[in-house]
Length: 276
Image 1 (cartoon, rainbow, N blue to C red):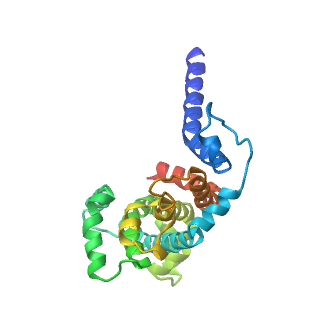
Image 2 (image 1 turned 120 degrees about the vertical axis):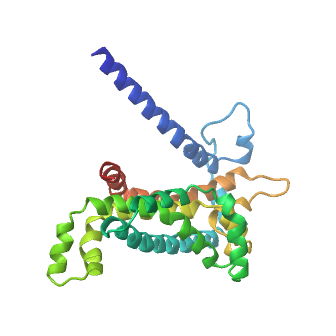
Image 3 (image 1 turned 60 degrees about the vertical axis):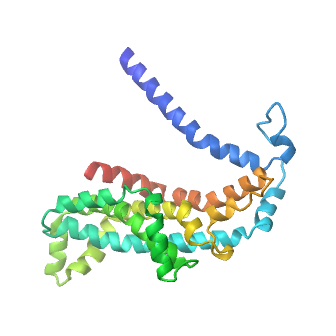
């Protein structure tokens, strides 16, 4: 009984540590966005805003074209996510259903391809986009993000497709449905949690990416939100409250996305881990 009590306490302590470690930076960022600049340098530290103000949120939109940055991020992340899901769906279905030779080698290659740091791919990607005259365009980011997110999406979907009985597809094809039709009408609806999980992972990765966005789209009108927020810093100034306000605004779309689809995401991660 004592061992069970100790084990339960350890689990609760671990969960509490994860919550504090995950939510404290976000809480501090939100509180900072409402503080006056004088409060940030006050000693002792003031944890709560003494005179809360919304002027930093106004400054976030007026100092830099934040709305334009958010629009760029939304376009790039949405298009790359949809493209990644389409390609990953076809690849995952082929791996899970077709009699491919050395299927395990294919999966190993997919896993290996996702392990390269982005910084090692930066130069060849930049040279490719420059030779194609795609710099400072949405396409310059959509193509790399699609390729980078595709391995993760494929691995998530393979485990779901393998868990769906083949008899359902066979019955549909006996009734006159093609294999492609069986995929879109039978398999994908049953694998919806996995599709949502892969899609949100791809969207968040594209939304938060900084290095490629900074290197490939240097024009002010084509900056994404992470790059645009970095531009708030001046040569001798660092407006923490305004930057915090801009970060809060940038986090809101992703937070809403996860809140609305949290059940499907949690179910997708759990089922994928159990069935894979």
